[in-house]
Amino acid sequence: MSKTEARGARSVAAPEPGVRRYGALITSTLTIITLMTVFAFNAAARGVPESFADLVEKLSPAVVNISTTQTVKAPQGGLFPNLPEGHPFEDFFKEFGPRGQGEGRERKATSLGSGFVIDAGEGYVVTNNHVIDGADEIKVIFKDGDSLAATLVGTDPKTDVAVLKIDAKKRDLIAAKWGDSDDARVGDWVLAIGNPYGLGGTVTAGIISARGRDIRSGPYDDYIQTDASINKGNSGGPLFNMAGEVIGINTAIFSQSGGSIGIGFSVPSQLARPVVEQLIEFGKTSRGWLGVVIQSVTEEIAEGLGLKNTDGVLVAGVPENGPAFESGIKAGDVILKFNGEKVSEPRELSRLVAESKVGSEVTVELWRNGETVKTQVVLGELETAETAMATGTQSTPTLGKSLDVLGMKLAPINDAAREQFSVGEDVKGVLVTDVDANSEAAEKGIRPGDVISEVQLEPVTSPDQVKARISEVEKSDKKSILFLLKRGDNSRFIALKLDKES
Image 1 (cartoon, one colour):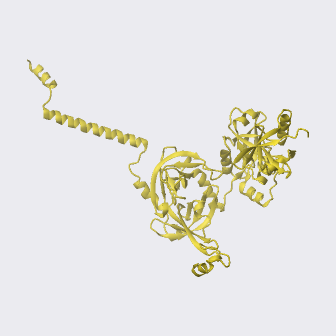
Image 2 (cartoon, rainbow, N blue to C red):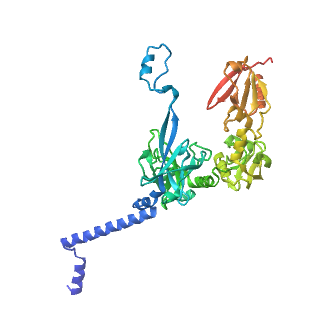
Image 3 (tube, one colour):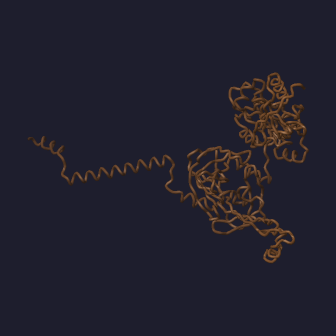
């Protein structure tokens, strides 16, 4: 065997056992290092933080606890009953009952919430309206236990936002910064810092679970849903993104037990921030007002109006002297776009209008009589309109022409009808405004305020339709006719006898 061949043979020969173990160890070590590197790279790519500690240390000083005190009048009689004179236990309760129990004594009730400093120079603090609602005294408590009295700058129940003010000269303040909630995506990491159950500064982490949640708490619901634990006392506290910016105000939870089950809701910063700025500047909100009563477009409505889909918002009513009325918008129009923004449901339109500047001219795109038209509208102020309506200075429509049918007086559902009989904006049909006391309708329990939505299983929206439908059924051999009545959230069928001779 040549030397060359021998070297070649040794190069492929099996190594000694010790060498094999050493080589295997090196290979395993390299594999572990490689896997750890890949994991770390993927974790970094996913944005999974190794720790929140540095971020929490930076943000915590801006978060405060809110303590409120409210004077509550105890119910008269307290825990002891007011017994009639001569009752066997009258002397007992007089002897052992608390003094002055029948006077409705006052007591102090306290509650706790959260908030955050938004302007260190001026001492402005943001929290929820429901945290301070009805409070006689408000205190802002800091992480170090120090507290300062706070005054109420302004509140907005519609978005559940409130602004407080403390004396910025009495201590050094650190403010949180607003972030853009529109940039937040489902799956992003978030931090909630607050005062759950009065425990003081508590940090929880989670992700954004959903966007645009409507929990029926107000007309502008657009909540961020998160699984970061939010409990009682967290209300008013901030929801931070990983850049340390406030993208939400923690406001509500969904829970059957009262504790966190991983479903919490925060007012997005893009909705809250303009409200906070208006409260600071004016002490109140100043929202745009279009002046329309609106409802969703159903498939049936879309088909009837010649629309290809249910996008848009149906105008159900137009109060007189409002911006929409002045611009020629009519009931039956479908709003497709507001100032260039597509709208697909009433909540979207309400929010867009509210966020618009009072007095600005906007373009409203409508579907009317099978074609698209545009009109210009100068927006009014919602708060002014609400005040005018409350004081009766705003002109409102009157009830429409009524018809007498089977002992009932029927009228179309317009704005005046909805207001007078508390008919919801989403309710459709014909309103019963009066009932003959001697009629079968009265005997069957029909009363003013009921809404007839169907006659003999067919929908109706006007008194004339009801009368025409009754005439059709009278030509048949039927002796009675079915009405589907809606009262509040309940519906029921009622059959009334037909008087064919008359």
